[in-house]
Length: 401
Image (tube, rainbow, N blue to C red):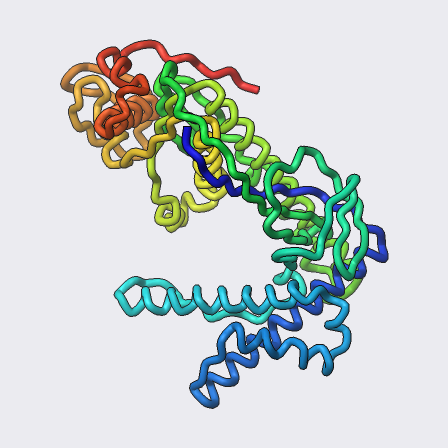
């Protein structure tokens, strides 16, 4: 048994009163002002004097700013300091991207931007200034807010982030660290190879297919109607604000539907199998295809594989990434290369005569690669050695929720 530090974030819904919501909005507004003020200072100093100013130099200026702008005294001091650190992180990212460009990589550096109302949506209590007690969250300078603790919070709380969504909902995000005794990897009894796609969201090596829900595509007609009405509203009018809220609520519903589907699917896979194999896809590169980009983003493969990986790690399940090279073209029966375009949905091998769905063929190849990978890293004692000689064994089909 090994000792490890587990890092997690717990997200809970807040239910502030009207007065508390006004206070939260005021805090956000003041934090945004601090961010834009120090961004302007950095920008002006460099353009006029070619001089840089550090994060800590700017933090030292906060007490002076409080005297010039007394409203800042209503915001917790560590929260204001964290705003400056957030700005510094934005600049560090900018410098990193500039350096990559010099090394020949084509990436826009993206200079840090000034934040508008909807572009600054959170503030942080980095160490203290908050207390969680009896379904109430007590925040310094704000008061006691009602919170929905839908699950137990385990571990030591490190930071608290208060976040506002585009639909004016408020959430408390607790970042925790837990000293946990990590469990050993489970003995491998059931294995599965996964091939993600657009026609079907997921195909296993045993032929089970999970339909692609296409939540964005299904809501496009409704979304377009609302957006057309929104475009006709007068700028800065109350009707336009209401219309904007309707669009945001529909987008939020689509996001929640997608997350619910991905969480349930990844949980069921981890519960049913001890070894899960999948491809290491270059999703960012794939979205450059203008014909498939929207469908790929709607499917959210990256989020699914992230969830699958961390859930497998917590459960002691093997989650093995393999190279996607030739997994579709290779024949799972004889190993012969059979070239085929995306339009061809059936794999037909002229050498061994195997005729099978191309996605099932790819899933079988992915599983074979994963078993080879695991078997060559000295983990045979966990059960892979027992499985390798019997590659054609039946694999348990997981039950849908």
